[in-house]
Image 1 (cartoon, rainbow, N blue to C red):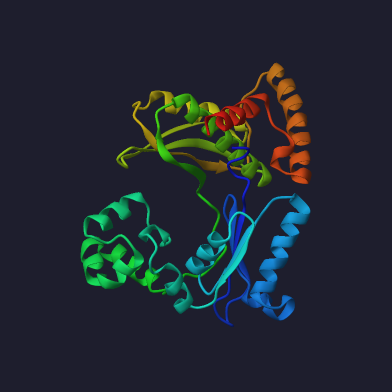
Image 2: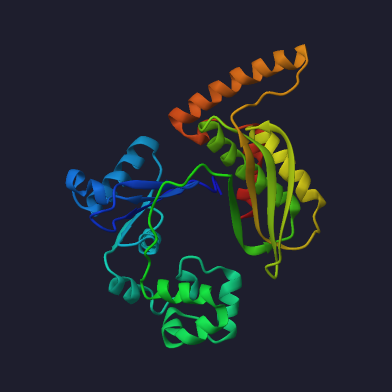
Length: 316
């Protein structure tokens, strides 16, 4: 595992002539509504190919691009040719033909717990959803209706820039349950690094770090701690790792960190010695940030981050 965040994806979405260009960006992926740009840059496929070319040219990273008529179709399209491909799903009929015999997990938003509930009523594939629409809705209520709609290709969600986030986080789901908590700490270190980079780019600080855990059997817990504002990866990691030390030691299927309590002010009480150290740290952080802006997040790594990456590689 050289970098658990090194395969960005772009989902281009075009909905209607009355929709202006908008964008939503997540940690390593994004949705674009390119309707308002079609007259300038050509088809959505042309725009997607140009995005893919520019990412490769400017960052050297592979990028999977999916083009669709809706949010779910575009995301599914991006998954078809990973890690460095391009695919288009232009209509609901094309989407249904593509996914009809696949696992229900192909539906955007169906996780392990919902999959288990569907399996309990004999619904394992998208075809099973089509053949058991009312049973799915009766079992899962409004969520079941939402799943049926998505399976049929009905997705009217609008791509839009969200209001200022109250929280920001990411998580990693493992293919097998993890019992080695030192391994989990290595994963936390890399997650903290990525989250730190994101909020430093925005020039903001967080007061609260929340650890998110899903155990074997899908039991979920969260643990939080608040303190002085920070945007440093080391601070975020130490808080998350300390929270991890206090939880029950059971097999873990998912781990994540969420940051909240954002502020633009990092002011805190400091002694003269603290001020001198802070100024030195600030200069170092500024140089690191400049290098990462120019060459990417992997341009600068701490010794602890390098060690974590090597251990994760050896465990694969």
